[in-house]
Picture 1: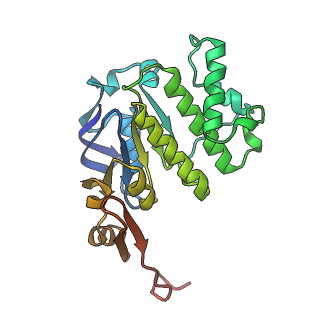
Picture 2 (picture 1 turned 90 degrees about the vertical axis):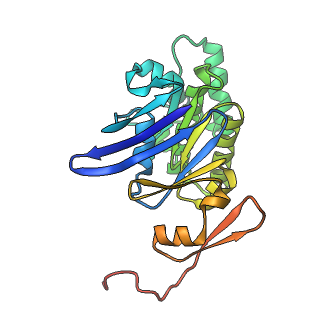
Picture 3 (picture 1 turned 45 degrees about the vertical axis):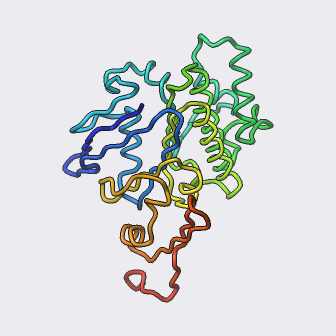
Length: 266
């Protein structure tokens, strides 16, 4: 289990997270939601082991995450950042190969690269340089990279896939494909933590939703329990309606008011 216990994170004099706890179990997909500045990306980064919290502790399969060497941490979890970058002129295939340990036989490495590129719809771009891809295609290539990293580690049931806004630069079809890939990873035994702004995607695909606001955890549970009109309207400071097409999947609908005052006059 990936387990953050009562963590507080501060940068300088600014406290970004306050006494936040969250657990991600193998085999489940947890969506981390909330408005801009809620602390979602900071929580994901802390749980990935990018930095230690000021207070509290983070465990990964019982080990204090800050005590693990980088190679061991990379074997246990794979992270897709919100804005992954790559300055060198790698091809798509070379990008994916960066996440494969040298101990993996070349034929297996090639098979993993081909499999994950097919999953994200980029099988025909394996020899292209990453720079000529569109922004959405580059993001999908990086998604394939972290999928390869997790698969190459050979830790079924104990690996964790951590995705920070993986759908933000994608069209609707590829948003759905990305979330299906995340769900498949969970079904295969990984614990999956996904930061999402699209509440409908969270409601449709997540086993649990964790809703944050102002650096604190507001609610956690099934989407139908967490996503209520009153709670969402208060947190997002705009009118939001919630419909229930069935007992499990709510549909979240912003109530647009084009004539409402939106801020200072220009």
